[in-house]
Image (tube, rainbow, N blue to C red):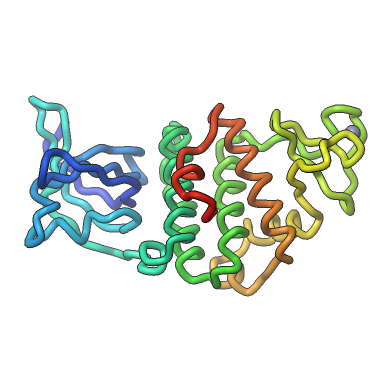
Length: 250
Ligand SMILES: [Zn+2]
């Protein structure tokens, strides 16, 4: 194994080691999730302090310490820093929720390049969209990510009564992750409306600038977000910590 590694990366998480060192968790398209240390990054004057913040995308120069089996960040060349995501609370928590999902599913365990591309595109979309579209963008990334892992539920038929689900009726996502028709679902279970499904299928194929132009009604946006969060929590087998941390903002 070579001691130096140069990789593009998206920083997903920061932590503190002692007073001044920063623990950085990043997603690399070629290597998946990596942990590295930015020495002195919590000192005001460090060249590594600003560029190792969460949700910055950059080219990173890493040194592998064979004795400790850990990476040290030696240099960072920023590519994009998504200022609105870092500066607006709802966008920040949205991206934090994505990061938690990706970390808790080990970035899918294989196709890291695809996960990296999806995450970077989603951040670009989130950074540029009007705040009222945040919910739809939150759901869109979760949909595309879970789809890429091959874990989307079967949307063709109601899991309880077996009836085929029609294009023009809402689909309910139940607490156990099952997809049901209106007759079989609890009244308060989140729905994926026909409009939300059209949005997902359109948005999954179009470039970011086209997706920014399409919209979804307010009720469908909120229900789609609830539905995708429910599907993701089923997948990881527990509640998302970010939701609790966001204190009602998401
Ligand atoms: Zn049914």
